[in-house]
Length: 267
Ligand code: KIV
Ligand code: NA
View 1 (spheres, rainbow, N blue to C red):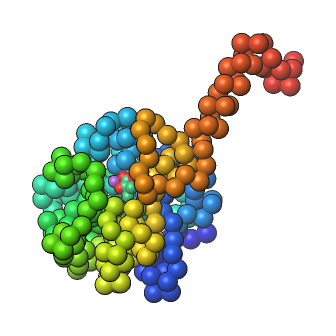
View 2: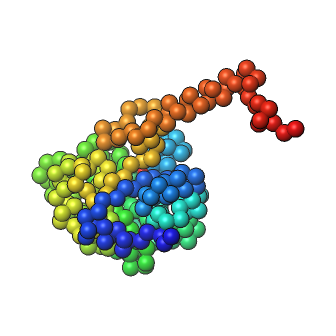
View 3: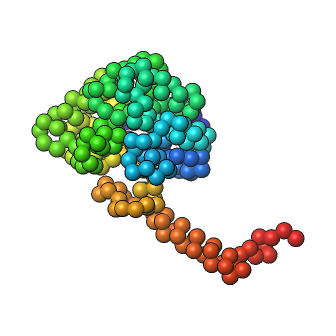
């Protein structure tokens, strides 16, 4: 099986075929999602939250994300693997972005990178693209900017904010981005941007008119930490309940002396 390429995603936009993207942070889940047919896997800097337990994505480092990318790349035979560039690793200059992206491509084995921001990071997108690195852009609620956004809230509401997002989207496409994530923006605005752009849009809390949809896999599968999931999350399973039950029965059987049984023992 051939690996999915950014050309396949461009074709899907032409034919109107929608596709799913999921985050992955390790070998086994990458294998499962890949074999289930998910064409694009994102090693998100959301690993900050769901792997490392930070409150925000701000503290996570390249050194913390790189090993996760290696695991996902080994697990995914067919899916295109996108590595998120963490906060502080690309905003300084296009050259800094290139240095970081090269690490994720060469040491990590990713086939593309993702970074957050609009017009301001267009020079980064341009340099990476011209260097042969496919770039996925990300606008709207950009969690690395939580401290300037003033919390996790809907973005692009109102005429001026909507205009800015349209401008950002256009600038990122012009700079060479192959796809655009839009996070928590009004569905009408996401629809307009999706129609205006020739590159695929990937929504998360951005309505059904995007070309693709992404969720953090633990959100999608109902593996919950503290706190309520966002409105845009649909839980397709209740892994928290499944695991809690499994752990509880394992613990009980150990305490009761019924595990391991004879069939689990070597004689
Ligand atoms: O880090 C992440 O998981 C993401 C997706 C939610 C788009 O950026
Ligand atoms: Na991210």
